[in-house]
Length: 326
Length: 299
Image (cartoon, rainbow over all chains, first blue to last red; front, side, top):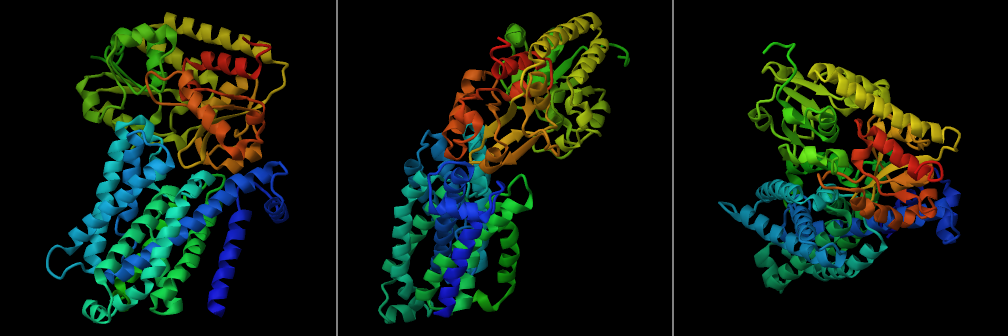
């Protein structure tokens, strides 16, 4: 309980940090008074309500979605290297959105569906590729398939943007994730999908615990494997697709957060999931705050920061045998 | 051919180089042109229609295929060793093949093969364009035309400077909205700063000097609070100010910027990236910016 309370406290502190830190020099007290009494005009009010709060909300939603999606993927495939970034799900969603924009679908509630479809196709392709050959879908084979797909989809995204000058302007966001794009309307549009994905994730948590014992054991304990798999997959597509729509393709959050949660709670997915909801935004928002401070007056997109910090973590997971068994 | 002969087969890359070639009257020597940022100035439309044009920069092979003896470039990325833009190789590597080259001085890097970051700010000046015109005029054997062009530019710019000499100097930002919600602005190392300066304003980001274009967040724009914002639409051979309206809409539509003076005062104007490039467009751009900053003094 103490652990859960301190995690939530840390999240609150991170949100405050995200509201206070920025290139506009606003004092902590002026930011807090703008939060408490909105609409009194002035620069701080505009920045707090139209820059920092949307940015923080984007981090909250995308961070928890990616964390939960990563936990689902790791539980479902019993693969410690699984995550929506590593396995190419985010890139697939991102590419599909670029195609949608190229086709003239520019509204969020339009290309959201492309993102889900792109995430789904990427998941199927990576799982199929990773299962080929002897030994089935081993963690490293899946990660390799994900890396291959990410590289290919990245090239295809470049091609689409080169063919169409209008999407070229969009390219940077769909190649590197960022929390500065989504406005309140975009967040409101994806909100219900994120909620649905999270509810599904909570619902399958117990079954993922059984799955961790092995398929045969899970089946004999009464788990309906097909139902669990389908529900988990739908939840992953909803969460990763919607997160990509608001934050672009952000890597490593979905990989790292479930491991941190597992280290805190142990292997029970009914606990891992809520911890991911809290830890995902902490990690993503901290990365974003670092990105705001490193290269002033410019800003590093959050996708660059999570990539820099996440790659060593990924290598550590690959090298460490003990985690390699879920 | 000997080095002293004026170049006969010229390849012009980027808007400033293309327009400058037409201005010097060497259109018939152009074997190829590439990468316009906007429609050429009205006085060169007919000339441009007569030459080969590709919207993207050529590869090294495609460039050499046109058998140029001279390459004139408006930006340095064309010869940069490690460039995000496609590069045709360093100027030294072209020289080995007998192809001479020229980068307009306000964008010329301190050493062959380098990029934007190595520009000498002292070279970013309207005067360096006159010097380039004079030197290129001599090189192409068209000194008289060059002198005429220089005289015309000087006269037009001086006329503007005269009119705005005693006026207040509003702060101006050249701003391009990015897809991720951030903005790209022109720094003090960019020629745009000098256009604003001559037109009777100051670049509100003039103190940033590390590179020509700087990516900032909306917060920085609010902090600097420019009186006037010029957009930065780019990169299509048919682009006109009319096409920059969408950038105006994006800037005016960002609720975070609602309190910025330029937005509140309805002073966000459609403007083209081509207009802030260093070249013979300088007079046109200075006149245009002056008419936006000081409508009562300049038409």
